[in-house]
Amino acid sequence: MKKILSRRKGFTLIEMLIVVAIIGILASVVVIGIGPAQQRARDSRRASDLKQIQTSLELFYNKNGKYPTGGTDAEMAWADFATAITTAGIGVNKIPDDPINNATNKYQYGASGDGTVYVLKATMEQVNDALQKTSLRGTIYTIDCGTGVDTSDVTKKKYCIGP
Image 1: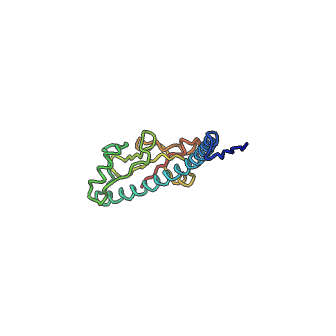
Image 2: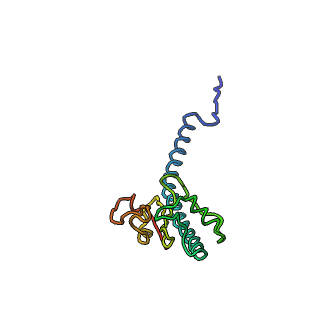
Image 3: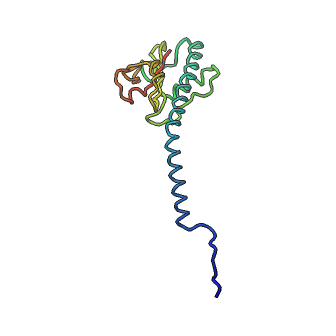
């Protein structure tokens, strides 16, 4: 009597599940590893954006003899600030927004009532000691720039610049 040997072709369900599980584990490790790099990239963009906005402010000052202001020593709404800069005829068509742009991560602008001094603020996602050395401190035109004494991450993530 002849024995019939069956040759199996393909993979079993168990083998397929194991492969899918391994791929899932590797994918989650990669995604977790990318998170801090994305935060650093957004923080770099924030610092670059503030410098670009600072240049726009200097162009505005050269043309108008003062920085944009709401008339009091206070924060100016970002949309009003962007409109003031883009309609000033200084060649600036757009003011950048924070890469995330939500209630926590947004750019802020405040100025003295006479338009002689301003502050720009961005909230960073990671602590950057190099930026902290150049950051302004205190409450400036109702914008909280941190104390510089408190070592909590929340305070150290506030980055403020002025003229």
